[in-house]
Image: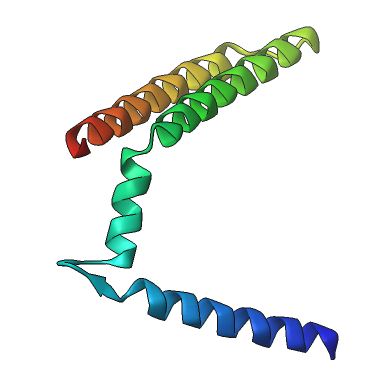
Length: 102
C-alpha cells in the first residue's frame, strides 16, 4: 500500500510541476526561462568538460587494462580514438551553443 501511495504522490507532484512550468511570465514560460538560465550557467559548461574528461579517462583505462590482460587492442584503440573525437565535437558544439546564447 505504501508503494502505491508513493507512486500516486509522485505522479501528482510531477503533474503539478509540469503545469506550473507552463505559466507565462512576460513573453516566455517559466520553462523557457529556466532552460535559458541552465544554458547560460557557467556550471553547465564546467560539468560538460568534466564529463568529457571522465569518459576519456574511462576509455583509456579500459584500453590499458585490456593491454595488461593481453587482449588484442588495436581495433579497440581505434574505436576509442573515434569516440574521443566524437566527444570533442560534441563538447565544442555545446560550448559554441552556450556562447551563442550569451
